[in-house]
Amino acid sequence: MSGIEGKVVAITGASSGIGEATALLLTECGAKVVLGARGLGRLEALAARIAGGGGEAAYLPTDVRRRGDVAALVNLASARYGKLDVLVSNAGIGPLAPLDDLRVEEWDDMIDINIKGVLYGIAAALPVFRSQGFGHFIHTASTAAHRIVPNMAVYAGTKFAVRAISEGLRQEAGDKLRVTVISPGFTRTNLADSTTHPELKAQTIASMEKFAISSDAIARAIAFAIEQPADVDVGEIIVRPTAQG
Ligand SMILES: NC(=O)c1ccc[n+]([C@@H]2O[C@H](COP(=O)([O-])OP(=O)(O)OC[C@H]3O[C@@H](n4cnc5c(N)ncnc54)[C@H](OP(=O)(O)O)[C@@H]3O)[C@@H](O)[C@H]2O)c1
Image (cartoon, rainbow, N blue to C red; front, side):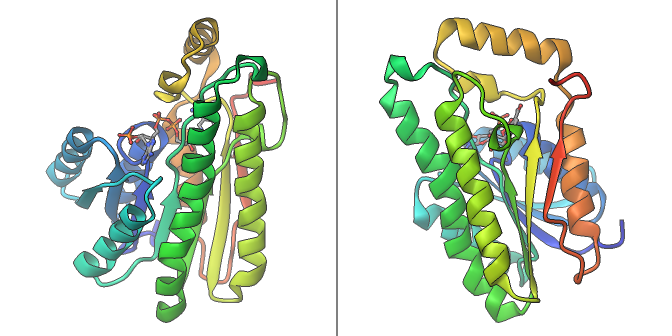
């Protein structure tokens, strides 16, 4: 994977699931990673694991609901490693519930984290990428951005928004910047932790155990997009369990 060696990759939502698997795979391929999430302990543990395997990782507690936090994460990449090749805006939550429950705080959180978190990533990295003359945005959407099902209306709405914003960004980006959307299907992670509806949470965990795929599958798709030559922009990859309807 020579297209990954030496690249500097900042990742939000890096402490768990897809973000963590991506950090591990990319550092195995010779990238330097800058890890962001809210929980310091998990970031420290992951950075230590990467360093123990001979890789390079920096980390910063980051809440993507705060524009300044996301800017600080991007700045850390440039300050520590002298450039930023890729920003993986991956942080997300997916509390499932019927709209009738009016869990409005969860709607607000999904909008703030899943949509505004991605926008803050663009606000932080776009000027850096423009001045460098290269850069790659990777945004984690979902198969929910393609197919709407009950109890996922707001989550799907946020992921549709991520795809729309990414496509607009791609069209405006010009011939030096790349934009990739990764749309995972059901993946075995801690995502169900954000669901507070008891039955839906239990159902999600049971389905995850039954047929979800490993986060490594999504990490490989992200690595594939990064390793392509600079003139090849992988627009979107959907990776779902073979058993997902
Ligand atoms: N798992 C699936 O089936 C699936 C399917 C489609 C799409 N996705 C998407 O994949 C992405 C990663 O989720 P995952 O499945 O890997 O879930 P996960 O294991 O729960 O990981 C979520 C990550 O996001 C971080 N995070 C949450 N809120 C944050 C905030 N406000 N600021 C910064 N970081 C925050 C979490 O760390 P902290 O809590 O410490 O901040 C954690 O590192 C999400 O965008 C999700 O929507 C997942």
